[in-house]
Image (cartoon, rainbow, N blue to C red):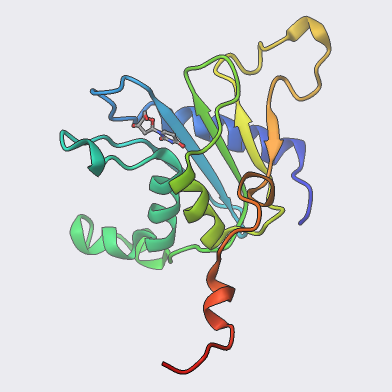
Length: 174
Ligand code: THU
């Protein structure tokens, strides 16, 4: 997977912070923002959206993935039937990077359910940037070039995982 440019990295991280502003988290008060860089360069933002029936909560990472995968073709029907720009937009399911940020001053890692959903759409080695809340101030004096960002991948976060290709394997007859 191609390395991210410094510009792409900054734009993606800033978008994750922007996504966090849309968090609906009245129950946990734990805001999470995510941003996905699609292969065509588009950035899609997400936030955690909680529910009074707690199990209905959707994490920021999954919000971004589902928003992206559906694209605005659904939105145009629901809210903007005459918008040309929306009509031209299509669902994106090929991604180059993901950034995740919370209000915690250390890098927070995606939950297990989100890892499995990320696994569905992202390459094993696609960069996943876990961003501390105080980025880019983090460790300003330490000379840390990563500014506290922990870079990982779904291959690291979810080793020996189950994915779409496994459904293609030959199976015994039933
Ligand atoms: N949350 C996320 O948005 N992403 C994760 O990977 C971990 C947890 C959200 C869900 C819930 O709204 C809040 O954080 C506390 O669990």
